[in-house]
Length: 509
Image (cartoon, rainbow, N blue to C red; front, side, top):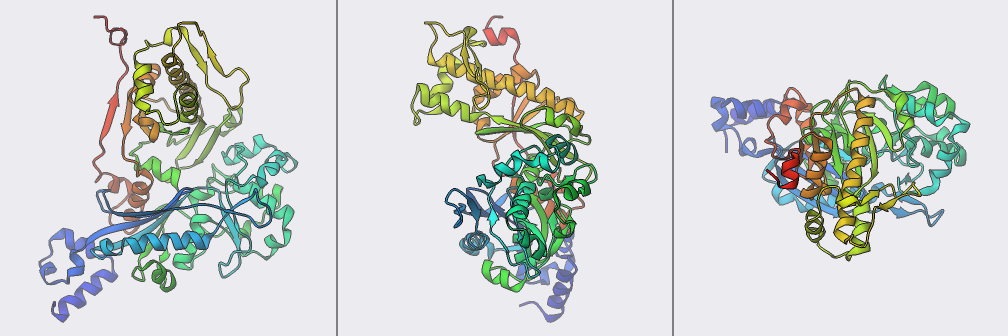
C-alpha cells in the first residue's frame, strides 16, 4: 500500500484532472502512487444504433480495448400495429448488459470519460424530471409521412431546406413534433423539454437537460447558418422554443455520471460525460476526413458528405436526396447526397445468381468484361425512374455484363452527385475517402477512381463513429488540446486506388 501522503496527493491530482499529466511527465512521485494510476486510461463510448447497442472502450491512440454488443430493435406501438417506437428503458438495459459483459476488462482500465452517439432525429417530450410524456417515435415509423406531404401549410419545403439545410425526409424531427402538436396538443403544453435520443440517455446519466448540437442539426428546425433553432420555422409551425434545452457543442462536458446510472451500468460514480451526438458527424471525423475532403459511406445506400466551411443551402432543394447537417466542429457544415447503391447490386445478384452467391464470384465475372461493358449501360435509379434498367443488351450479353454495367452506372451517379456537392459546398475534390461495406469491392473502387479521375482511398476500419466520439471526449476532458490533436495520435492505414491510364485499362503498352 502507498503511504498516506502519496495517496492523498493522488486524490488531489485526480480531483483536478492531473492524473494523465503525472503519468506522462514521469513525475518522481509516480512510483509511490496507487495501482489505479497505472491502469489503462480509456473513453467509454455508448453507441446506440438501429440494429445494435454497443459499449466500446477506446484508448488514446484510437485503439479498441474492449467491446460488447447486443441487438437493438424498435417496438410496435400499442396505438397502431404499423407504427414503430423505441423503448428508452430497453436501450438503457441493453447498455447495462454490454457494460456488465465488459466488467472484467474494464476493471483493468480507468474510464476517463463517457460519450453517447446515436442515430439522428428521434427524441421525446419529457416533464421536469425527465420522464417521457410520449414514446420515442422511431425514424422507421410511417405516421409522419402525411405531415411531410402537407408541411406546405406551415412553410414551403424549399424555404424549410434553405433555412435548415435538412432535406424532406419523412422521419425528420420537425414532422414528429408537428404530428404531436396536431394529435396530442396537450403534451406540448405540459412538456418541460424535447430531448433527442442522445440527450435522453445523457439525462439518465447526468440529470442534465441538454441538446447535442449535432443532433439538433438533423432536426430540420435549425437556422443552419446561425447554428441555433430557427425563429421562423418554430413560429410557422407553432413549436415553442422553450422546449429545447441549452445547446452543447461536441466535446463539451454535460455533467458527471450519477449514482443511479452508475449502479445500472456497473461503473464508478463521477465519470465526466462528454457531448457527442449524431453518429454521422463523428464517423466523418473518426475516418480522418479533413475539411473539403469528400467521404463516401458505401452500403445499401451511398451517402456522400463533406466537411465544408461554406454551403449554399438555396441549391439543396433542387437535388433529390440532398441535405446539410452541422459538422462536429463549429464553423463547418456537412452537405451531402444519398442514393440507393449496394441495394441495387444486391438486387442484381438475386436476379442472375442466388442470394447466397459469394460476391467475389460476381466481381470476377465482371472483371473479365472490359470497361464500358461492351455497350451495355444501366440507369440505376430504381426507386423513382421509369426508365431504370439496362440498354445495349445483345444475345452476347452475359450476367457479368449486367453486373459490370451496374457498377459503372452507380459510379456515374456518384460522379454527378460529387459535382453537385462541389457546387453546394464550394470545394473541389482532389481525392475521395471511402468507408463502409461497399469499399470492400476492389473492382468497384477502381472503377470509381477511373471515372472520377482522382485517387480513392479506402479505410477498412469500421469503427469510425466510435473513434470520432472518443477523440472529442479525450479533448473534452482536456487530455488533448483539441479533437484534431487526439486524432493525430491515430495511425490511419488507407488502401489507395489511382486512376488508370488507357494502356493500363486495355493491357496495351
